[in-house]
Length: 482
Ligand code: GDP
Image (cartoon, rainbow, N blue to C red; front, side):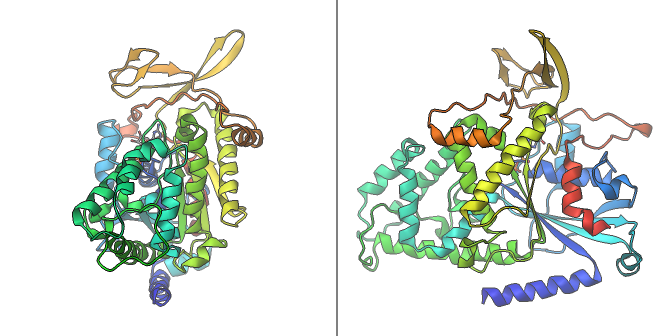
């Protein structure tokens, strides 16, 4: 039934696309990866003809104009572009992050180099941008598991050294309940709450472990508190089927509902309809948090890739996207590094992506990788130190940031040495794998305020500055504007 419905959706989308060429671009990434900032900057740069030398269609002057139009899907919330732009540019604060799915339609009018396109599409492309939490993609593997397998995996990970202290309160409570005892809503709620607390603690800055499924526990969207989200894994389940009316039976039923009323519809109605996908990752935050966080990012990324590049594992469900022909993995916030490190960041992420792809039996050769900053909050400077030039970055730290004991008020600039990334990703990963105590390169991650946007001619504010956003656009949209 899923397959049939997806096929119908695809036919409907394709038919619509014949009348009006459309590209559905998915934007995802784990929370705080930079989705909201990315979409806002992409749209702003297209509408205001920003500086995009590496985006051929824009650079050669073929994009005539771009504007927003009502989106095609009435049941999906709109991406609140205007609010986000106002926060970024007028207030110079970062906008509110993605909490659920949202959509925005941008129409791009371009001068087609091909007479065929000019004739049939009038040189217009509808870009439908779909923003959704990467956490939700982590649920795909659940479709191939029953409650017992899900619980066994979750408990095994929770007992691993990187997580066991955080999982303590939940594991203790879970060990104290009898799965065969009569089902109790109070116990189910208590277990679900403790399990969610544990998942949330893994995400905290100093750990920066990537999220584990179920993805909606941290990003519930509009399902907060519903029964389909009120369950938790139970440890050490016996082989025998649970008695009717027992706690275990209740948990099993809810786990099955979670899969059928939450996970499947999301994949069927949204993921399978995407044409292209960008996945944002905060690789520097992971590197800063240490070895476990890097390994964990790799694991999360392979779960995410499974939705777009099925390899062996994705054949489980039939709900992955067959339509996506381009996947871009983008390491964001490159403005936290001096430009000499941008290529190094790219090389490191490429290695992480290759390793993640291998895990799901795919080569990763067709996945593009980029290091970029959707909004550039810093500029560069150099300082001479013991006869050597040091690359510095200069920006306005957020109010409350503390650097070397100095407390910032959100209005003063400072220069920092951001640190160097390893030059050789190969040896970096060898080091990571060889010793748990291996120390990672120190990167100085300071949270800066968004940049001050200059006024151009006629008092119009110029578009948002970025790093390599134009390259990302060229890869994702270029061929459709040819
Ligand atoms: P989301 O949860 O994926 O929607 O993440 P956001 O787009 O809200 O970004 C989370 C935070 O990361 C922001 O509040 C900023 O502090 C930071 N951030 C995101 N993109 C950039 C960027 O391009 N440059 C810098 N300096 N910070 C960024």
